[in-house]
Length: 506
Image 1: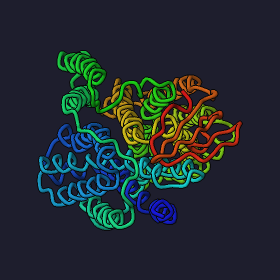
Image 2: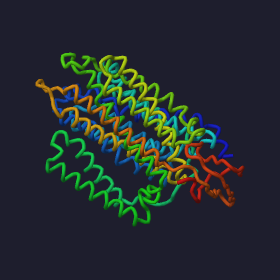
Image 3: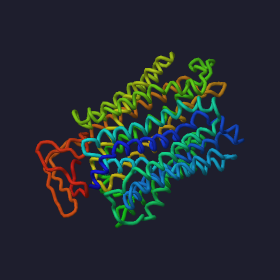
């Protein structure tokens, strides 16, 4: 009866999850176009105000896998509500901030909200009927990217109508409503993994991510060959190796390295890293490109609102294509869909690099980009969720989202170095800098296409599902990208909702 109750309300649960993920995603990018406004209002420097973005990125990178792991242990719905509470508290503090130090602290607190993604994927897997899993996972994955794009689009109108403080007030209101609804609607997790957080790997994970992301964010300022940058990269490498070794030897690892070594997991994570390189760099630099004055010979002199609208087609097509991505994956296989998404994305980057003299060319490029990203993100999320046991869903999907964020940091830092390599006499970037930068991002997506060819194809597998005292044996062939948990080739008894012993496809 309890199971039936959960399934009866799965559509309501989806609405709550969608609102929560959207609020988090908006906060990823809302402040990007208005950093100069924040800099002037808080009386700080350009270098310091960039930490309003960097602090959020660092915090989210650290807390995403940690919150996913805690949710797997104590219950996803409880941690989901707590995560939304932290996101709302950080938004409140940011809205009230009177100096840049308080604003940076607020953004660190907001970064805890990164846990909504792995927790949302885990709740979907726990609560949704099997035939609805793929479409729900794809929609949540698409919303996480679409929300980030919409943040840039909405920033200008919000600031013009109100002021930049409402970039935090509005998401805070949405987050509070979502948290209350989540506490009421989402039932207790049926799948938990008793244990404890091993803080040694958690601290090592935090340390190497901080070293890596600080180096990437500051390299364009300090210089890629400076001693501080080389030292940070070296420290990141040493700490990362230490983290892997501690996780391998730990009885209660934060992230199971055996899981991360599965071909279906590490290949999708590699693709996610490369997609992150492209997506976040476009979010950061395409508005800057169109806001450049017409005197540069390439800029459009666009306002914040106008530059945000350039990215609107990407948000629309990303959402629409993401909603149907898993239907294509069910028919052709997730591997093909991810490969196609990478190739489509590479085409859009080529258009930005070599056809950017008219606004309609930019609109076309971003629309194509959204289609490619929508195809790939939804399919990757389903492939990750279907590749691991239910009790590891939170950590696996959290790391996939986290790796995409790290890729974004790499892409933004590399793009900054390329764009600003040879400035004009007035200090503004040359057109060639943007051309080379967008071409570089296209190259990253071509590498992602090659990585997608490494995603494993289906193989014959045996799956044993355990629920209470009953055991059911299902033998068949799992198709990567097919509806999560679906098997083909042999008619079997339905898989029980419980711990899955054995693997589907690697």
